[in-house]
Image (tube, rainbow, N blue to C red; front, side):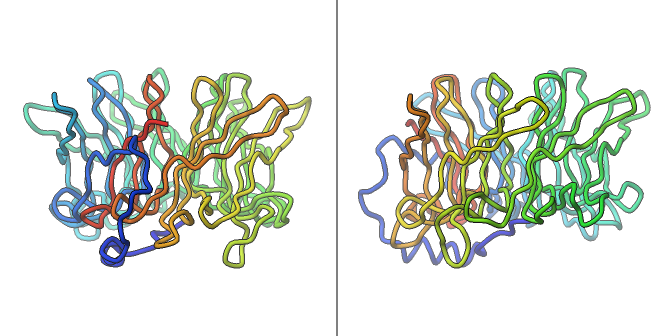
Length: 408
């Protein structure tokens, strides 16, 4: 699991020591700089669009009680954005509330919001799935599931996805489904990882799930697999239940990536999968590979992997903890946690464009300098106009991370 690289205190020092200079694109805009106070701090999750173009997300720390928040960003008539904290999590070790959320949020058709916390839910403190219901001027939280020894799952890092029936799917050491019933929510474990010898089926599944065209689930593990360097997997619904298959095992070789990032995969119209590895590849950054962007294409009876880009470090960035997103033209966008500015190595936003000769062109769209954010470690999202929105875990004017917009 990728843990926060800096404390918020260290991040604040980073901002104070990083000298701002005219290097960032004029199309980059900080929507909100978190202070580490009641507005929250430490953004490791993606943003989510909902009604009227408002953005929603979580902070892993701070807030009213110090254990994270769920927030809303609303755009005003003059184009400025304002933050509202919808919920502040309580102490997960002494209450039945959850706390320390790392995952993004998802909405049902009724406007209810769902997410996960990595801690809390009672004495087990193995994490929760929560629901926030909008009301008159406030939101009401309900814990709909608490993880513990009974389900061999816990500590969810990623957020949830929702199907057309309103059932929820997620990852918490095991892949799970939460089904809505007359007596509340019922959990079903779809697959428990590291069930096979030497964890050949994958281990440490921190990245979120995505749906395939037929309702199958796809994701990555940071460890395990045939070479113990991570996997891409599929969980498909069969007549006998759910079955997991490893589509690719990453080897510890320079010709391939290793240790997939915590960001979710993305699928194109043909069903091919795209993702990143935070290490591996043909270039070395601080004793490990700088990372890769890869594509998996379904062939008859197997999947074929192609490395689309090997990160080189320095000004072009390295260590892509997040995955990629794809626009309507097939361009890929993502972030790196490291590299970029020589002053702080705070990461970059990049673009990969396909060309007619089969090669992909890599372009740095924005270089973080600390004062405008640092350590972007969550998938970007796209609006209908092709604008990108994302978060940084640290940096910004308050040192506790930012939410940003970027027009490529």
